[in-house]
Every structure is written in C-alpha cells, then in structure tokens.
Length: 282
Image 1 (cartoon, rainbow, N blue to C red):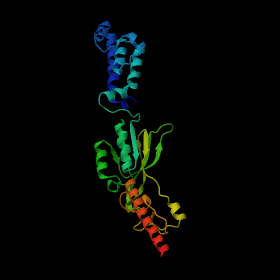
Image 2 (image 1 turned 90 degrees about the vertical axis):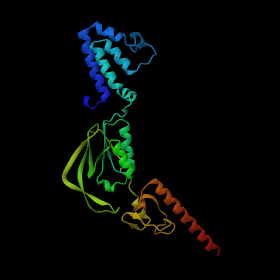
Image 3 (image 1 turned 180 degrees about the vertical axis):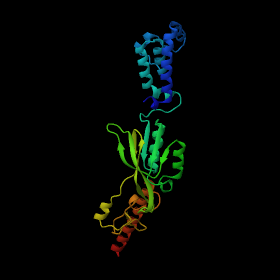
Image 4 (image 1 turned 60 degrees about the horizontal axis):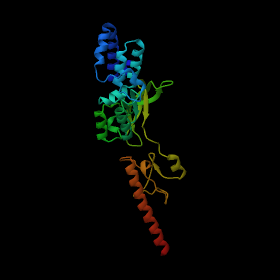
C-alpha cells in the first residue's frame, strides 16, 4: 500500500517518522528549535475557527513526540496527500492508482488522458487490433503518448478480476485475420495466451451497437452490417432515410458526420416532397 501512495506523501511520512525519532533522541532542544518556526500554530488554535494547511498540522504533531501524535500525523498526511500534491504543482486527485481503458477511439483517448490528469499513476489503453486500425485521430494518439498513456495492442479483454474491488483486467492475445464488415482485419484470439493487467479501475469505451434489428423489421437492404442508402441517404424503402454510424461504412463515424447525414437526408426529404407536390398539381 505504501508503494502506491503519492511521492510527496511518502516523503512526508518518512520525514515524520525520522523527526519523531529525533524528538526522543534530542528531547526539548528539538522542540525549542521547531518552536521558532513562524508557521507553527499554538495548541489552543486548534479549537478556533482558524484553518490550517497540512504542513501546519504536521508541524504540530512533530512538536509532540508521543505515539498518538505520530499516528495522528501519519493519518493526516495520507488524508491531505492530494492537497499537498496540488499545492506543489503535481496532480493527485484520483483515488485510483492504475487504470485500464478498453478501446482505441477518440472517446477512449479522452477517458485515458483525463484519468491521467486526475492523478492515476498509470493508464493503459487496451485494444484488440494494432495502431493501424485505430479509429482515433492520429494527433489524438500522439497526444495521449505524450501524456504518458501506455498501450497494449493485440489484446482483447475477457474478464474483470476482483471480488469487491477491481484488481485486474484479464486479456487474451490476438492476431489479425481476414477483413471484417468494416474492412479492417478481423482480430482472432490466440489459444492459451491469457494474461492479467493489474489495475484498480476499468473504463469501457468501445462504442455502441447498431440497431440492426430495426433495419430487419423495416426490411431495409443491408450490406456488411450497414444500411444501404443513396446519395440523399434514402434507404431501399422510399420515404425512409438513415444516417450516422449505421450507414457509414468508410470515413469518420463521429457526431459531426451524423449531423451532416441528417442535413443531407433533410434536403432529400425536401426535394421528394416538392416533387410530390409538383406531381399532384399536374
């Protein structure tokens, strides 16, 4: 547990024990020396409304070299570790030390970089393909690497380890096979290649599934798992239009592109309605 504490907290805990020992060796002389330190609060101040920074609480405990104050100080340093790290320019807010992020899209990278900035000591992105098949933008990929994000490619999660809390992510090694419906090489599991990544938090960022059942109910033409549309995003059934990830076989599957699909469909619907009106007037 000690090895997983923030570095500043470790240093203060060690210093606390050292000064506690010196207190017994040097006695009142050390107490008098610390009493000259201007930030040391007096004992009565703890009953007032005055708030103290963590190092003031630590100093108070240092001046009273009995075991109870030592225990109090060590607990206080652990509790205030995040505050001390923030004060000294480092980032320690997240209570999780090791995070695994499943996925390799832009959203997965966002989750990984934010976890890192919130204080996770290690963040690993787990992806079943290689960098060549990642759906994230290349500049996002490079940005994440600069943030200290680690990658485990050709690794597919199969189970989360742990009973009450997460202790690890079990994965199986993969190899690339023939292209799938997206045109990318299909990942295939390598038998007896399971391994476990130690972590205490798992974030799943693998996207959503398309509503293929709805397309089947409407008897829409499908191709490789995607709805077939024309230049106006009209499906094989007149009057039914589609857009977004369910039609985007190639290109970026993003919210912006889905909005564009909606605008294209709106123009198509508008043109179809005008043509219907013209025909009716004739």
